[in-house]
Amino acid sequence: MNDGVSVAVARRPIPALRWWIGGLLFASTVINYIDRQTLSVLAPLLKKDYHWTNQDYAWIVISFRIAYAVGQTVSGRLIDLLGTRRGLTVSVAWYSLVAMATSMATGLRSFAAFRFLLGAGESANWPGATKAVAEWFPKRERGWAVALFDSGSSIGGAVAPFLVLFLYHHFGSWRPAFLITGTLGFLWLIAWRRLYHPPASHPRVSETERAMIHRDHAEDAAAREEPKPRWSALLRLRHTWGVIIARSLSDPVWFFITDWFPIYLVAKGITLEGGLITLWIPFVAADLGNFFGGGASSQLIRRGWPVDRARKAVLLFGGLGMVSLMAAVFSSKLWALAAFFAVSTFAYAAFSTMALVLPSDLFPSRSVASVSGMSGTGAGIGTIISTWLIGYAADHYSFDPVLIAASTIPLVATGLVLWLLRQPQTAPNRSAQRT
Image 1 (spheres, rainbow, N blue to C red):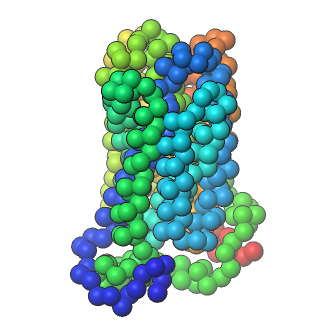
Image 2 (image 1 turned 30 degrees about the horizontal axis):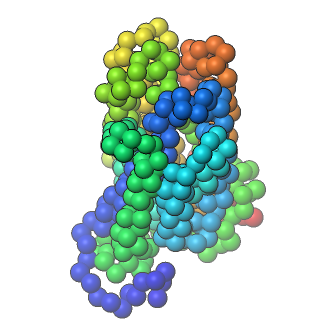
Image 3 (image 1 turned 90 degrees about the vertical axis):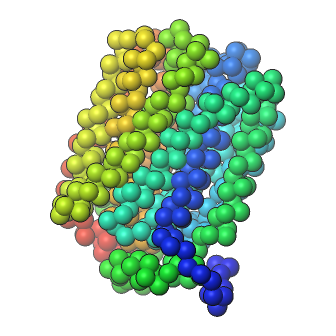
C-alpha cells in the first residue's frame, strides 16, 4: 500500500498516462484562476457598490498576495514532505470552500479576509504542479508539460469574464458567481484522487512508461538517499536566487494585467460590457506564449542545444517582448490596447514557462517544490509591493507610470537571471544536499 494505492490490483495500463496527469494539472490551474478572477471581473461593479478607491481595492488584492507569497514557500515544503497527491488534495479542497464562502462577504474587511484565505489555499498549485511534472516527465518533455499546466492560468482568465458576468446578469447579484465557481474544484478532486499516484506505484502506468521515467530519474538516485536540504542550504546557491528573481521581477507584470485590466479599461473610458470582447485577448495570447516557450525550448534541446542554453534563449525572448506594454501609454483605442497587452502577455508567458521549469532542471526531485515555493514567495513579495504602488499611482496620477515600470523591470530580471545561471547547472544538485 502506497498513498492509498494497492499495487496488487491488476488494471489495464493507460497509454501516455503522464499526459493525462498533465491534463489534470492544467484543469486545476484553470479552476484556480477562475476562482481568483471572479473578484477581478466584478471589481468595477463592487467598487461602485461599496465606494472603494483604487487603493481600497489594492488592499484586498494585497491580502491575497500576502497569504499567497508566504504560502508558496510553506506549501512547497509541505508538498515535498506529504507528497503531491495529498498536498494538492488539501489545497484544492481548501480554496474551493473559501471561494464559495466569499459569497457571504459584506464589505472591505470581509473581502480582504476571504481573499487572504483564498491565497493561502491557492499557493500550493504551482509548487505542487511543478513537482508532479518533475515526478512524471523526462527533462526533454518538461517544457511542454509546464506550458500545459501553466496555460491553465490563461484559459481560466479568459473564461472567467464570460462565466462570471453571465452569472451576475442571470442572477442579478454578484454572490452566486462566487458560490458557483467555487464548486468546480470539488469536481476536479474526484478525478485527481482516482488518477494521480506516484509513477513507481501507479496501478495504471505501463511498464514501458514507468521504465522511461525511471531512467530519466536515475541521476537523482544518490541525492534521494541523502537528507532533505534545508532552506538555508538552498538559499546559498546562485541558481536558487536565479529562479527566485526570475519570478519576483516578472510575475508582477502578469498580476497587474489579471487584477487590474478591467479597471484599467474603465479608466481609459471604456465600459466593462464594451470591453468584454477584448478582456480575453491577453489571456489567450498568454496561453499561446506558454506553448511557444515550452515548445521552443524543447525543439532547441532536440536539435542538440544544452538544456540551460535552450531555456536562457526563451528567457531572453520573453524579457525583450514585455517591453511592448509601454506602447499602451500612447493609445486609448480598445483594440490597440488589447494588442499591446497581448504581445506583453505572450512574451511573459514564454518567460514564465522557463522560470517554472528551471527548478526541475536544476534541482533533484526532493527539492523541486521547495525551490519552486521560494520563487513563488519572491513573486508574491514583488506583487504585493507593485500592487500597492499601482493603487497609489492610479489614484494620484494615472496608469502610465505603471505601464512604463512593467515594461522595463522584466529586462532587469532577464539580465540578472542570465548572470546568476551562468555556472554549470550540475553544481547545485550536490551542494544543495550537503546540509
